[in-house]
Length: 154
Image 1: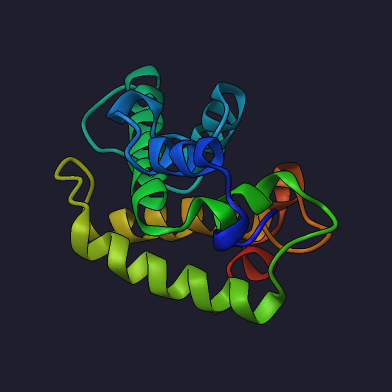
Image 2: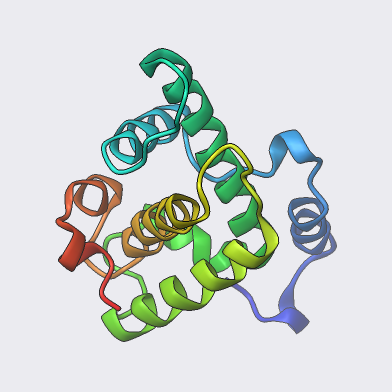
């Protein structure tokens, strides 16, 4: 990647277009990843008063909301490391980002149909999977299937 001084006009425009993307384009996860993450989240969080199918639909929306939060609060250059095995952040940086982003997300995102304690668990879990996917030698599947102690090192 060129330095700022070396960016062509088209590369700079692409950077701005990505930054100012409309809401429907502000996602980094694939549809499959969103569904798989919602399924894993469903094992951890219970949305009261509704059936399982409705709960899964709600949890997909929770994952999308958190993905949008990360798009807005994490530089895409870091978020894009989810797609790289050889480049990535180290374990300490992952832990720091998970903790800081989870607290910030809990302050900025309110999910009124989930109890507050479950809301934080949901946010930290989703953020943990995504950030751990950006670690060196990790990918989405490894992060999604990791045990809790390995996934969210706090």
